[in-house]
Each structure stands twice: as structure tokens, then as C-alpha cells.
Length: 490
Ligand code: NAD
Image 1 (cartoon, rainbow, N blue to C red):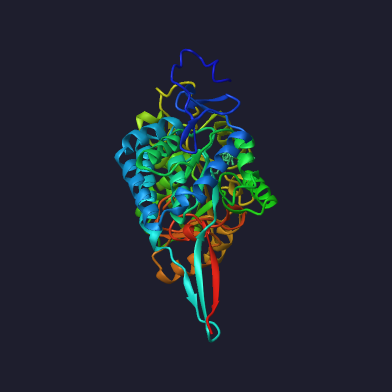
Image 2: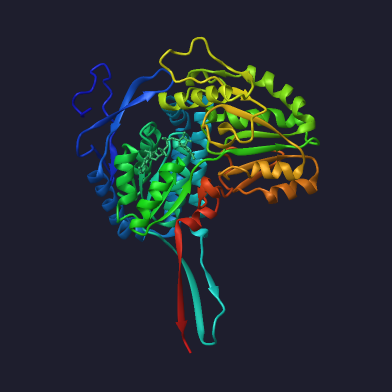
């Protein structure tokens, strides 16, 4: 669709890119329709950008990095980020509602995401002037300083599941280090990213420090990863695209962090406090409709309490309701029709493969027909070799599997290609640390589970879940590099 043949019934002007501090149409004047997943109807348009638009954004970022943005002190950068955090917090209601409409997530989740985004800007704003280098004892007559410097221009490819949060966590850390950013949000959910970038302009970020180019992954996304002017790429999304991103970045020797999802296990031992665990086991897969990279999608249960845990989870699953974002039920729709088909296809295939369907939640009776709803499903015992036991669904589908003893539990938990998060439920202190240490993943929660939470906590995966770390101080090390200065002063 071009900028000029929009449906007249949808009178909203198309949203614009932000390049070098200015609102910009895509060079080709093509648009992408934005659908609300709750009813499948178009409610906005964004720019369908291409390589020329990405090139303009990268050049604007480079000018900012070598100019006004690069000249700011770390304290000045930090103050701008804190101001942006305050602006986001002040508009958390508006941003939360927009996020909710754009992604379909329940209103309260949209608002929580806006609060989290504000916290990312605050956290990294106050960290900006605390990132320091080191000195190293060396030969007599030498002083060695290790400086920590920005990388230059960083590219950020953001997925649709938590646009506000993932945008916040990745650009706040990069900007705190002094980099200039070019962001390509997901074609399915770009609106809050564009809105926060406008706020950045309003609070006084120099032109070009933060640029947003919307569009499709294979067009604008690929152009960003291939651009030789980009020094580093932060990517969150699917393993398949993550691999393409890494290959494209390698061609011009840019570094990457890849956050690629998971098949995260929660291990429930017989001595666990099951009353505390049960609601958290459900929330860990239902939050954001299961469209969370760190969703706890496998519950591994010590065999002797398998039936007891099952009997606790079944009524909770049966009580779950999916519905439109503004009803603020347990979960909203899936992001789009493709994701809905994928989730329903996984459930149907698992049942056909022999996995018992233990419970199903419901779709609210007044949910619009055009929405992309999937009813939550609880299945088990799921065969260890089944597709459902090994592959990421990215939907509200929970697999239960029994284990025999601690060694079996650890082997089962580590037995997929992924390694992002794990949860361990036990009241045996020694076992909790033993098992946490044995998990092959980036984060372990003991007697709790924090899907998506924890701005201060380093986060990222191993194996097919990716590499590099977001969040906490670790992200600042990813978005900066050391320079060692060796002075011979005799
Ligand atoms: P995706 O990997 O295709 O999209 C993620 C981002 O990458 C989007 O901004 C997209 O435009 C961009 N992209 C796509 N192709 C690209 C390319 N060739 N070069 C550069 N950028 C490109 O993910 P999806 O199709 O939106 O979802 C598919 C699956 O990915 C989901 O079912 C889920 O398993 C997984 N996923 C994981 C996360 C996560 O948080 N780890 C987030 C979203 C999706």
C-alpha cells in the first residue's frame, strides 16, 4: 500500500520514522497496515522502510556519535536518560494502552511494560557515569589504563512480544555507554517504540542519537544488519532469524547479542511448597499469552507427586480466560493469524501424537471473531522426545513431564537445544544450589520464577537461546569495548 491509497475510513495519518531528529516518510512511500490482534482490524499505518531509509538513519546516527551526542559527558547522557524515564513514567497509562492495543496483551500487562521501560531508562541513566575502566600493574616505569569506550553506531532489532520493554532495555544500555542507535521495531508492533522516540526528542536528546526505522524484517531489518556503518547489533527474536543476523553482521565484522527464546523448565521436587508453586507455574506460561522468550513452558515433576501437582494445575487452567486486551483477562490474543495457527497447530499435533490434553482454558464469549485467540492448553505426561517437549511454541501451552530423581531431573531440564531460564522448586537448601548450578542456562530462579522480570539482573541464554547478555550492568559491557593505554614514563 502506498502513502496515498489508504482506506479513507481509517483517517489517522500514517506514523513516521524518526531519522536524525526529524519525522520521515519511507523513501518509497509504502505503508504497512497495523492490526489490533483483539479484533484483526486495521487501526494505524507505519512506514515500510527500505535500504535507503536505513542508510539515512545510520548516517544520522554516525553524525550524532561524532558530533553533539558523542561530546556529552557520561553524566549529561545519564541525565537525559533519566529525563526520558520520567517522561515514560508520566505517560505510562497512555503508553500501556497503546502497547496493549498494538500487541493484544491485557491492559494491566501493557501498563506493567510501560513501568518497566521507564525503569530501564532510569537504571541505565543513573549507571551511565558509573561505568569505569581499570588500571593494571605492569612493568616498572609503566602505567596501564584500561578505558571503557562506546562502540559507535548500534543497531537494535526488536520483536513484537514486549516492544516497550525490549526497546527500553537495549537502547537505554547502549545510549548510556555513549553509542548512537538505529532501531528496527517489529512490523507487528512498532507504535510504542515510535512514541518513546518522540519523547526522547522532546526531553532534549541530540538529533540522531536515537533513530527509528519501521518496516519488514527481510527489508529494513536485513538492511540494518548488513549495513557496514553499524558497529554492533542487538537482536531479540527467533533462532532462525538470529542466525541470519549473525551471518550478516559477520560480513562487516560487527558484534552481536542474540536473545532467541527458550524451552524453559521448572523443576518441582516432592519437598516443594506446592501451594506457593502452583499459581506461579501457571503464570509463567500464561503471562503475555505465553509469547515470552523466558516462558516456563515445561513443568518437570518428581514422579511421586505428579498426580498431586496435576490436580492442582487442572482447575487453574480450566479457569483461564482469553479475551480482548481491554477486558484485561488472564491473557489476550496471539499477535497475528500466523502465530495463532502455529500455536493451535502445536496443540493439535501433540494430541494426535498421543499427549493427553488435561485441561483447556476458554475464549471469552464476546471476543471479536476477527481476533487471533488461542485457548490455553495443559498437556501431560508429554513424551520426552515429542516435538512439544523440545520446541518453543511461543503460546499458552504447558507440558507436564515426570522425573525419577535429581539426576534425571537435571538431564531432562538440560535436554533441549535451548538454555535461557530455569525454575527450581524445593525446600532442600543444598539441593537448590546443586541443581541451580547444574542448569545450562542464563538465569535460575529458586522457589520463584521471574519470566521477563528484573531490570537489574543479567539475562540471556546459552545454546540455541543465543549469546551475550542484556539487563543489569552486564549489558553495559556488551555495548562498550575496552581500550588499553600503555604509557612508558620511565
Ligand atoms: P522474527 O525473528 O522473525 O522477528 C523478530 C524481529 O526480527 C522483527 O523485528 C523482524 O522484523 C526482524 N527480522 C525478521 N527477519 C529479519 C531479517 N532477515 N533480518 C533482520 N531482521 C529480521 O520472529 P517472528 O516471526 O516475529 O516470530 C517467530 C518466532 O520467533 C516466534 O514464534 C517465537 O518462537 C520467536 N520469537 C522469540 C522472541 C524472543 O523474545 N526471544 C520474540 C519474538 C519471537
